[in-house]
Structure formats: structure tokens, C-alpha cells
Length: 76
Image 1 (spheres, rainbow, N blue to C red):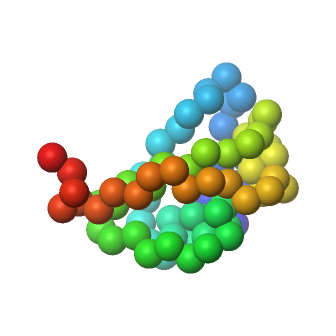
Image 2 (cartoon, helix red, strand yellow):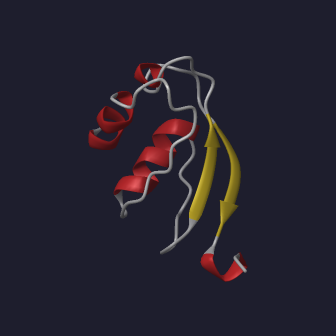
């Protein structure tokens, strides 16, 4: 809930954001956004696409789409 509240406060002039944090918070946020629990190892990257016009809509929109998930060992 704290991360959702933080994201809702992002100015709408930003179309893309990068969240950096720790678990279990990021796993819980990802699950809330895409509707499926997805484990994130240390230093993993997840890319999510949202169908929103404003960051304030993030908690009330249909599930987002996970478009990429990279584990550290996969990064060059």
C-alpha cells in the first residue's frame, strides 16, 4: 500500500518511472499490479505496462502487463 501511495503521487508529466526497493515490498506491488505472484530475486528487473492516463489511477485499473523480467545472471 505504501508503494502504491508513492506511485500515485508521481506527476503525470512522467510517462515512465523506475522504482528501486526491497522485498517483500516490490514483489507485493508487482503482484497487486499484474494479479499474479512473481518472485523477484536480488537485483532483478521487472518491466510493467499500465493502461492509465494518470498515476492516480494505478490502484483502480485493470491488471497491468508484465512485459519483461530479468534476473541478474541474464544481464550483460
